[in-house]
Image 1 (spheres, rainbow over the protein chains, first blue to last red):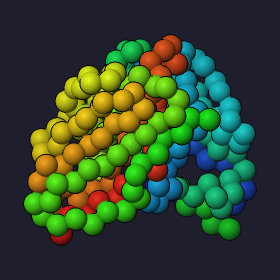
Image 2 (cartoon, chains in turn cyan, brown):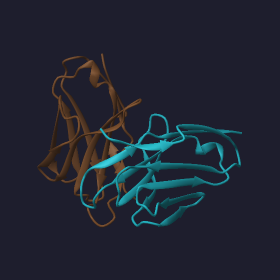
Image 3 (cartoon, rainbow over the protein chains, first blue to last red):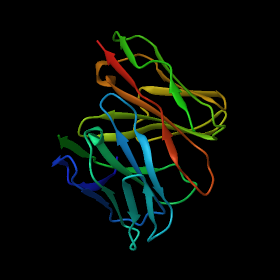
Image 4 (cartoon, chains in turn brown, blue):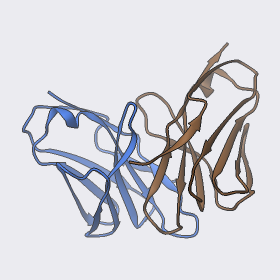
Length: 112
Length: 113
């Protein structure tokens, strides 16, 4: 199936550093979702975005719905070891439809 | 909090066996989904159910069927398991409103020998 371009694919960072990742699409989306997945577990919803330009925070996490509606960004501030995992985005073309497009994932490793 | 549960975290089955994966959500969501997740391929939609007894094929329905007899429960059936169905299976549910937010279960790691 179709996938969103997500970058970076993986990153090693030092504890305490800030992290940024993004998803881009050639299509316009109406909804962006950001998930975190730990090994062997299901994805956990972090942040949901519904309007272009929207900026939403969840603790140390902040995500933005791009103005063009073709991209979204996730930032993690002051990373800690438990931030390790795979982060991926999901976009939806039209509200009420069932089709989600998923990002390829960013694998984050935090060095203590 | 939304809760989506899956009947097994790990399953090992033999080729040719019939396999049932169960998913239950407790938030009265209309929509439920079954995905499989494989390295390098990401999440792929197998089936979607928009309400009780309603279903639609996703991107990779071959070799699978589903059942939704009650709103809270969505079952994925592998009629005759094959080794290429070894994968992580994820169930998700969604309330179909203006906030179309999809919630996932913990996953079932299925190995077919």
